[in-house]
Length: 141
Length: 79
Image 1 (spheres, each protein chain N blue to C red):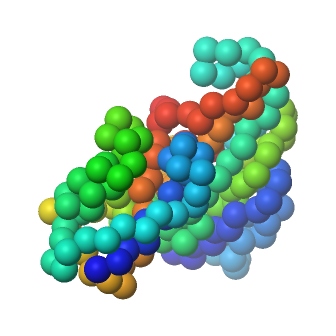
Image 2 (image 1 turned 60 degrees about the vertical axis):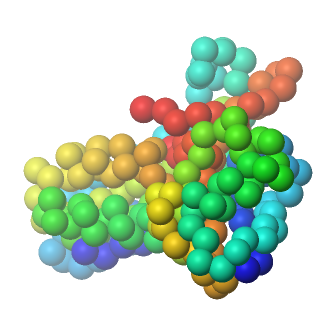
């Protein structure tokens, strides 16, 4: 399974992920997830932005480990992950994840598996920025 | 041995630095590292974080060496 990942300074976008997972004519299905910054989060409704920080070297190694686990569970051809660092404003995307396979069946489960593992293991840190301050967030579902 | 510990997120803000230097006896383990860190920086006594060595999460029994890449990982929150 081909694995591509990168951190970008600013909002994430779909195009790179999709270009990385359509690897050849064996691909019959691609599925892409996007996570956006929303206004109401963590029991507040005045979020104006999120600030992301990453441990870049471990970001890459942990994603490769998760992908290795995925390759034994799901029939995938490729996965691509683009995650933001720095400040991301309301409505902008902080993460895009695309997977490809010959058939659609495994792609939905695989994407959900990846997002759960991302939130548990991949060293990305998130600070919510409010109109009157900011705070680092704990682990979330 | 002289070890550098990378800090992230809340830990980086609280220490006002992206890393700290700690001196440990040879053959120390992660548990020893946490004791020394807590004795020099109070914040490590009342914060929850994981330890990564050479880009993998480890437990307190993990042995350390001079060349290890060490990081204190607070709550991760990607996506």
